[in-house]
Image 1 (tube, rainbow, N blue to C red):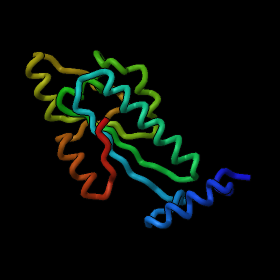
Image 2 (image 1 turned 45 degrees about the horizontal axis):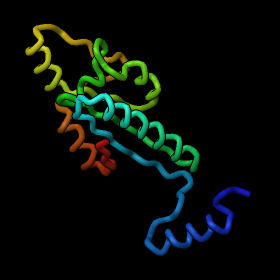
Image 3 (image 1 turned 135 degrees about the vertical axis):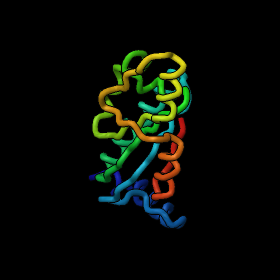
Length: 145
């Protein structure tokens, strides 16, 4: 017997439908953007934890999820190949999009007087804050750990 067929599962489904939301929607696709704009390693680790938990939960439900992390401002430190405090954990985000803000990259390079390397699995977007806004305009859910 699957958990959704238990008395509790049936009650939860009925309760959820009272508020116009099903408990689970097999085959549903979610889209979520995570913003990291803090240079705090704890915030970066929390984002990675949340992203992984979200993927596991939706997959367990038979649903899919597209996840994009957008790093800008002090949060760019997360995607720096040379100094990221979470560099070893970034590999766990395979299948998710990692976006680094070019405005921040340019500002940091100017301040440091050198080219900064970006994590090989990340892509560069023109402006991180604009990327977040565009995804929200397309209906993506927004999370800022």
